[in-house]
Image (cartoon, one colour):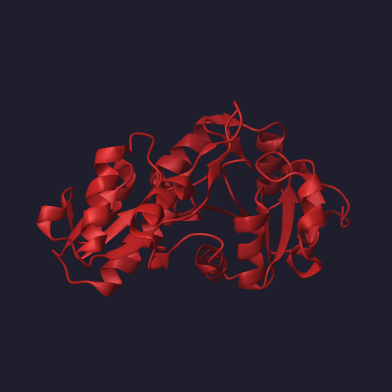
Length: 266
């Protein structure tokens, strides 16, 4: 079969939340579609703004759902943020981490010292999604940034898709600090920045990659910034009616009800 949408590409880069699964449940058609891609030898990578899991944890989650994946095929904003911090600062420098344990582990493995208080005089604050993040964490981050620490956000997704509907994402927590500090983060790592997509394509040696995402403002915008074609699936945040408010040059290359659209005619 040569007329499927996917056959025009040598790599598929998939977002996770809202595309492959919702929190911890696979989306209808995802398991079967990914199995078909693997069976047909189509290279696959996963790129997520969610900083609450490390690459190995994401791979374990996917395998537990029946989707074959390795840690090497997963790029997370947590890992990318830690790498950028390591590039900017010296080993052992203190970094205040606001987020999940996965982000703390990534920062520590990058050679930096994880701290939790502004009194530790951190050189940077890195903020990622974590379901246990509360006022006290945000207060310490506010004080540290006001004292001169670099403020890095793993991503600014306002919402996180779930089976119960959209929930507050890291962008909502970033907005708390933005309101308190009256400014935006110094650095945003994840989508819509192109880094995760470009790194995935480079590592796979791809000449023509396709991005699959559920958010126009992050996944599709990130694909545009990376110069890649994109497929918007309607199983997460963005809906078909949202396309009416998007400029033609910012729209996805394709739209499908779900990820099984990869296996259908373009």
